Amino acid sequence: MVTFVGLAHSREIEYQRIVMSMLSLYAWTENASDKISFILYTDNEKYFEPYFKDIQITFVNLTPEVLADWKGKDNFMFRVKVKAIQDATIKYPDNDVLFLDSDTFLYTDSGPLLAMYGQDKTILYAREYSFNEAVSKGGRNSSLFLPVIKNNKIRIQGLEFEFSGNNYSWNTGVIGFSHKNLNLIDLSLELTDYLYERVKVFVIEQYSFSLIFQTQTNVQASDKYVYHYYSRKKPVDEYVLKFVSEVVQLNDLNNKKIFVKKFTADLFEKIKTNPQWEDRPVLMDKIKLLIERKGDVRILKHVLSIIKNKLLMRY
Image 1 (cartoon, one colour):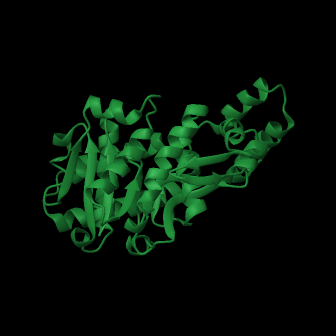
Image 2 (image 1 turned 90 degrees about the vertical axis):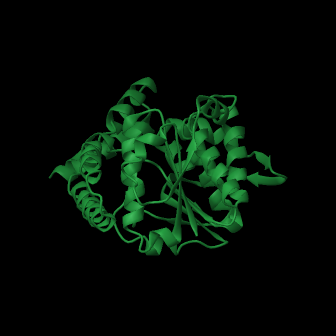
């Protein structure tokens, strides 16, 4: 059995995104009720009742006090994600774990994804870059982060870790691991706290999962089955609103599954054929950084590379 861990609080758009994410996993999993146990961490359980009729879900109430505690002493928002996963492993220690960010959805059969679990295997969304590579391109986060781990032995849970710039950052929109590896979440949480105390980079929790998973297991990508639209939220959210307004009207569970599968498969095709949907201003960020660094050659090369790729995409 796999425990699906969902997290949505504070904003209605987060509720709406997680509805599509959870229903996509349910619809794309044959006999989902026999394979997946759903647990959702939220501050608004009543919001979800119309969407999940006839689907068994365990809700965990995220009170302001719980959120404050889970953010930790440094008030780090993304620490809540790590704590929610840890809490789910305590509640269901015999289950494998699958966490999906709210801005994700499955667009094809989940069978191969759910077959990835193993004692020496973990699941993340996609490998992004080595820290050395990111620094060479003028990446701000990696430039701040790398000195903290480089040539530094870090002791966590009685284990000594030596990380380097050759390690990779993975996108953690998807996180999966076996019940035989529950210690990974404790290691990731402690490393998150250790690193964030030393450098206030908002992706520290992603770096922590990446480092722990790749040094302890064989990490597998899940982007052949799940789509993470973190850089396309603005255009995709229009479809999320359409999704929740239509799916709530379907009472028959089979009809709901048919609708969800068609909607998410069609949406993925739209995204693939609309590269202009990219709404993260990467180029502008790099130009600002280029000005701040007074014409740093590494950043200039990266800016020119982005412009070249955009021109090739256009023509």
